[in-house]
Amino acid sequence: MKKKNKRVIPGFGISMGVTLTMVSVIVLIPLATLVIYTAQMSFPEIIATITRGRVLSSFYVSFITAFAASAINAVMGLILAWVLVRYEFPGKRILDGMIELPFALPTAVAGISLTYLTTDSGWIGSFFAKFGIQIAYTRLGITFALIFVGIPFVVRSIQPVLEKLDPSYEEAASVLGASRTRIFWKVIFPEVLSSLCTGFGLAFGRCLGEYGSIVFIAGNKPYYTEITPLIIMSELQEFDYPSATAIALVMLIAAFLILFINNLIQARNTKILNGNR
Amino acid sequence: MNQNKQSGFVKWLLITISVLFLFVMLVLPLLVVITQAFKSGVAAYLKAVTDKYTVRALLLTLEATLTAVVVNTIFGLFAAWTITKFKFKGKKLLTTLIDIPVTVSPVIAGLIFILLFGRQSLLYPILKACHIKVVFAVPGIILATVFVTFPFISRELIPVLETEGTDEEEAAALMGAGAFTIFRKITLPHIRWALLYGIVLCTARAMGEFGAVSVLSGHLRGLTNTLPLHVEILFNEFQYVPAFAVSSILVILAIILLVMRSVLEHKGKTTKKPL
Image (cartoon, rainbow over all chains, first blue to last red; front, side):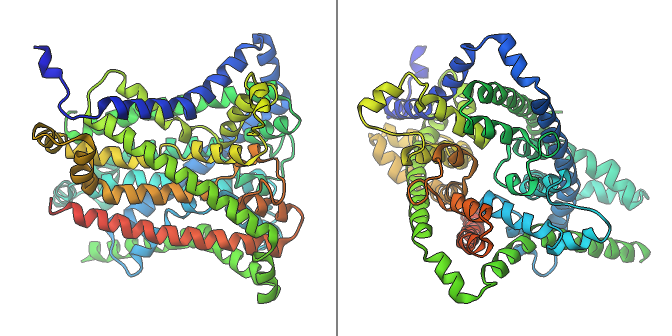
């Protein structure tokens, strides 16, 4: 009986060995250092570090801006995916290729050019300045940069689901007399909802940890536009490693939590795609 | 009729919204980089681009990127082969571990290497005795770059190999082919496009990495400065024209990679169909 499990393909030992060695050296050991380092600190010490007013307000700023940006991206991502899947128009392939630009463009470059655009003398900033709205160096600016960073996530999550969607349901609904808005909310939206959530989660996770595109546009005023990665950075520059580690730990837990929830949604998603409701 | 007219209106409204949104969010930033780079003329642009420190930063970026691509390609091939061709316990745990680097904030990625190799680490005396400097030196920058792009290639390969199954490889193995022959003759042709695609994504991310590298670099101009860090320094010194000129190099690289990406995606789709 046991012979059934015998591996036919050769090379298991060496490939497993190489994989495990590299994972250990590059991921496991460095991450373990973080855990070991935190274990040396006392619990009240950690709590005292992460409940300092400046740190708490950075959590708030990071959360609120990442949430706002991801929510806007969820709406725009849905529209973009819809346009790219359902409509034919000149220049569509260029539009489709452009979506990935935030992945390919270095965050520092994005950061300085978005800052330049949104200062009071910039192309976008001067327009909003007429209405008394300042974008650069405010929370609005952070949100603006995070929208840039998060664009591809929602679009790329929804696109494949929309492509697979069977048009016969919409046709049936239309024949039965449903209006277009009703078809959208009752037929199409439920189908894409879970992939919309996945895209939102991915964008949100990325935005929480984002650093490069924000340092320039945020202005980094404590209690107002200081995000959590920036606090970690300034603690590191002062060689205050215990504080940096404690704050990093909170971010790490938040990131894993988002990843976990996302995986749950995704598991449900693939179940639906495979037809076992 | 009425419905057709209405849907035509909705169609063009949505297309206009999409185009406007992408124009403001994606095209304008690129236009800013180009116009600001050439604001003081071509001579100033060329001077900034051929500056000694810019060239050094470019070389360091290329070095880090190349290392990251090579290391992660080797890892990606072995990991994808292990995960898709064999059954073993803890597979899920392994794939989760591989994916961790992309979920971690770049700043934290930098932090963990400081904790591992920095002054307060247990390894520090050993490294010092061997005269190896990791933190605030080139090895640290390369390590950070490898870390943040770690899963990029395996992630592209695993889904492709998973849909291929293991039948062909098993048949070859039963006929007496060795592991390397099987890989070269059977597996590699299947994953060719996915592999190139992964390499493009890995290159794009590696050359632009900022947060993690920034933590580990120490910003020594000409020594541990990558191109994105050089942009930051110039911008913070209010040298806008050089900052945007250096950025334009990265923009051009990003656009080349984007075009390659779309071509590869297209190729991957069209070659998959006849199978």
